[in-house]
Image (cartoon, rainbow over all chains, first blue to last red; front, side):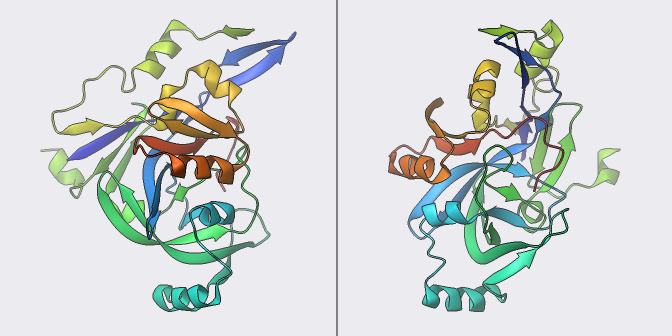
Length: 170
Length: 93
């Protein structure tokens, strides 16, 4: 089965003579409802599907709000064993400065498909002006579905079946 | 006062993703949580976290933890946490 998701339009506004005018900035982004869950806590988040990101990323304060205790020594030790990675690490974006993160396991669910993924929690303040609460990268959603982006049609597709371009031309 | 300068085509494209093409039989269409907002509301809530419950904005603010806490207290499953970053971001972190 294929699931299609309309791109979400983000309008741009300008203020002129104390009036707000909405303009079409042509900003369309692929957003996907993704449920994060751990133990008995679960909540759907609107995530951005980012094929340019190697990792699935959120923010420390969001992890704390979902009940994760990043300071608990026992939890840190157990998580390192489960992930096979250091609990504290650094990742790099397009800037030159490394970004400090915690790495834990998190359960995600998209259109009924569940998977446990490594979540990279950025140890900086979440800023809703410039950040998305959840970024789905290559290590999660792209392993669960074949994803096809059609900006022209203003939507993207998640395909449960393996997409084969040769068969599509027959 | 908010003045809407959408052209007819822009409004049609936004309200009819896929240029009005009907989904195939096996295709399930799932709009985003933010799709319940009008353009004026998207502008109004830009830079904020939103808690959308049963199709309406019930919580909003710049404190993500507060909005998440309120959403977790909601018994309904028809809820989602989202945010509205600026429309002129070149890259996602």
